[in-house]
Length: 194
Image 1 (cartoon, one colour):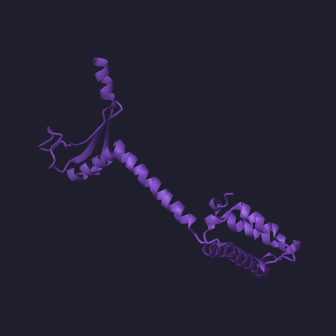
Image 2 (cartoon, one colour):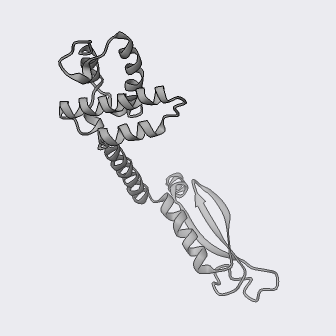
Image 3 (cartoon, one colour):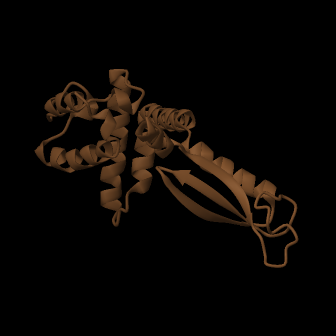
């Protein structure tokens, strides 16, 4: 029975405020005296071990706020709520990223290019226009709706005599166009799911 009580004590966690009184404080015998201007500290008992932490204040109220932060960090319900909140934030950010339109993604991609010549800039601008036209033709609005398989099918249509004007590419033009196409969509890898 004694052993069980000791184990239960080791799982107990407490966080409390106390005053470290100066030698001349008239209340130095009472660690819980709240109104003196002596430094306040936290006493944390956790996993069977005591720890003392300064909170760098002479205010009992501020020290209590710091103690509550420490209690909250250890509260399983509040920890779980914090995890859920962080998960929901990540999920919302992911959803927002998935909802980026092809037009916006293409504009961002073009703006991010460090192009050194007008010829290269023209190749990338034409690539952006082709991507936008192809996506519109396919009824694709968001980047998340584009798959690697769809891009491979599109690339298979490129010939000099293709039905669609934006698919009319000879071997040399294909070699110029393909790298910008794949570079653009590598920026948004979550969309390239077959």
